[in-house]
Length: 407
Ligand SMILES: Cc1ncc(COP(=O)(O)O)c(C=O)c1O
Image 1 (cartoon, protein in one colour):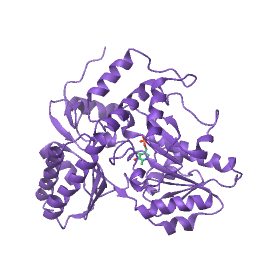
Image 2 (cartoon, helix red, strand yellow; image 1 turned 90 degrees about the vertical axis):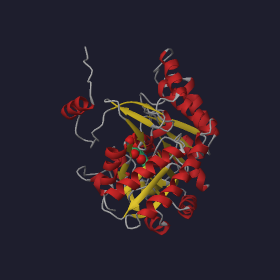
Image 3 (cartoon, rainbow, N blue to C red; image 1 turned 120 degrees about the vertical axis):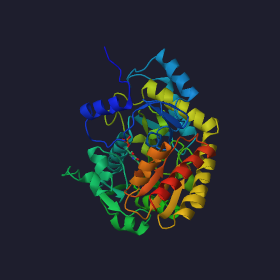
Image 4 (cartoon, helix red, strand yellow; image 1 turned 180 degrees about the horizontal axis):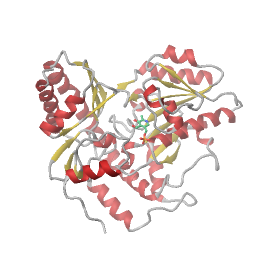
């Protein structure tokens, strides 16, 4: 018999006792949510601009998601990949019909979908008569996951440290510097992998020239262009995929985060020749593409694509950047270095060593949840259904925090 905890403090105390300490958590135990708002154990309400690190695209407790979950509970939750299930087919169909891709392979996390891309790239080279090609070029400051291959693909020493020897086969170029990529491509290269917008790396959009240049380079060398849209796919930028903004089509692309509205699911999308690489016995997963996660993904995509969510994301995102310039940059010119983003992934690069004091004050003084990434970038990744009024609350909270800090 489980005795439920009654307060925030009780959850936190027991959490510190029983949960492995690999995460730094805010002193807050979340109990419920509605739209862009979340509630803690003590009945306090917070405006959520962390959004489960870009997972809660439709916000909390969306009626279509509630309905989908209730319906699914009465049918089938899991059936293995020995069989077909309609939600998986419908989800793949929605992705294919709204993108440049021809096929979808499901996974359970962003790292796993990227691991699939890396395996696909190596086998693609072998299938095409190039067994010597195994190196994937990725970017410095990127983030691709925490498995051994994807943490190695990640171009950050802090993510590699302690885990050497790392798997061979990754080289790091400079994001937005095409020449640095060209300098690394050699006879061993099988693919180039990049995020169109670096998320964990501090919300840095690629330049159109960079992505277009990568496409041309890959075509010229006969190697694969792979995008990691784990964070910025699934509607985050106001399009289903961020690369749709750039008009650059990769051979493969991962997506995850907001795809399942909170239930773990990821996808490796492929087009053309890249669809024929991962044959039976070469890749797969017990849970991936199961009916529960796919029913939620199918519903999430249906709402995003057909109920105005993407338009709202683009419009409110633009409003966010406008207000950030008008209020935060104007009032704190010695603090704000740059405001950048696309749709509803936005960052404020600070001239200070860390944004954490602002994050802490927004939480304590104004019940606003934001986070700090890449050292000194305030990151805003709210649900895509957020309103302009809610943006104003956050902008005012950040402004007030910086004022209080004397910034
Ligand atoms: C761009 C990108 N790739 C991969 C990952 C890893 O995804 P997951 O944590 O689902 O494994 C993340 C997570 O933040 C990410 O932002």
